[in-house]
Image (cartoon, rainbow, N blue to C red; front, side, top):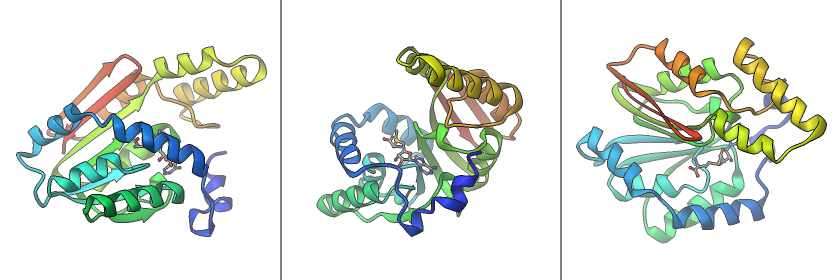
Length: 221
Ligand SMILES: C[S@@+](CC[C@H](N)C(=O)[O-])C[C@H]1O[C@@H](n2cnc3c(N)ncnc32)[C@H](O)[C@@H]1O
């Protein structure tokens, strides 16, 4: 069960699921391809980033944290990985921007923010419904959320690379999560499940769109 990790693998005690070499490679690649359309889409909702509080939840190397901060936002970087923390900190220093840093599991982020940004790390949460509720609570009233989730189409591509018992376990894990909301492994939710989860929360405006293997969820609380 995923929740056991919380007790036995604590980032405060040195646990880091992301090896240094992998983190550096991912960072090099991602810093080159920051998507300006994402930044523009968020800016449209805010009028301006200036002085807005932003939580980059599962921020990784911090490529988006830094872009928000450059535009005047007060950004909190939150992630489980110390290796990514070092990369984000070094990069922020080089770019001469200030970020706040918070190390922990996705579910351990706290506070309330004008903007919540969560990109391609949803599947690391321990329970899809509870995580959506946590996200909801992390956003101020009238605040804005921008969430990109790899959905079942992404999982299908990943499954095509697998075989044998591992493939069977992933398939079973997906089925359990979809039908009984039980997560045995870090498995991707379907677009349909995400739509259902967010439809159960109360928003001024909610949009859940499928873009191929990603689901984009945007809302005004
Ligand atoms: C694919 S990366 C995405 C990083 C970043 N959001 C981006 O857009 O590039 C997934 C991130 O989730 C983080 N992560 C994995 N498991 C986590 C957990 N249980 N709690 C918090 N972060 C986690 C990893 O350290 C990594 O930064």
